[in-house]
Length: 385
Image (cartoon, rainbow, N blue to C red; front, top):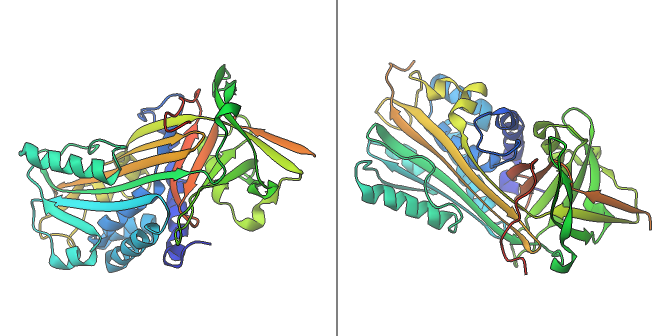
């Protein structure tokens, strides 16, 4: 079950994920191979919640449709979610903001989890300090802010998620071997593939994707410290040709829609992988119905007396999976600029040998990272010993 503080926000994050995945998977500008990507719905939601806390009028309503809250309610949601996610073992969450425009005290005090600092885009030390914050917040997985503030930027807000977790039942490196993987174009490759028999068949089930077609789901749990919530990673495999946006939501299908695998045991063949994606979320926000937020009609009057609009909204994410565990990170950032206009014995074997999805959950049911592996996987290089 989700942690109590997150329960009311899980459906909003999932809803945002389902809508956003359509835009991500169809975006021709995504720096991916054959449709591969990784992104963080949780990171996007947390960043949008901080923006929604200072939004008013139509801008607030746009962001409410994506976040599920606006104004003080959004600030409270962001704080509660940040605190609850911090209980997930191996996960760190941080948000920082740097401004050279006045920010209302009420706005700053409503978001006590955010570190506020001074922004001077013309000073190399300022940009270096922000990049240093990004490296620290992501434990070195992402080295710099995915956007560069110029002299037009008045405010930069950055959310960072970083996760390192070991499998509760690691894959044995000696069982890893080159096995076939058929990519989206139908080309077969030999790639390093891990192998394991699941400890219980209850770790695998079938659930409907968005189109209703069956999707196989294999859930692997990670280790957790005392008093910490364990990370769960669901690998989802749809029918050949099914797109990512239809397959990935099966990872959070309601329990009454999950059909257990009818087998005495389940074995899994899973490629090692390493995915990295940079996204320009600005275009996606327009498609998701938040066009005013990134236009001269934006209203962030609850944040600053300066007329502001979001100039650029970006996210960079990384995911590695290998025999011992996984590591993932996401940096979601946006810049505010001055608004230019006035506001108004039976063995079931599941081989992930064709395009498949990955969803990393917090200790409950909130999707931290979603990914789609379509091309031949690049072998992850973390601690495969």
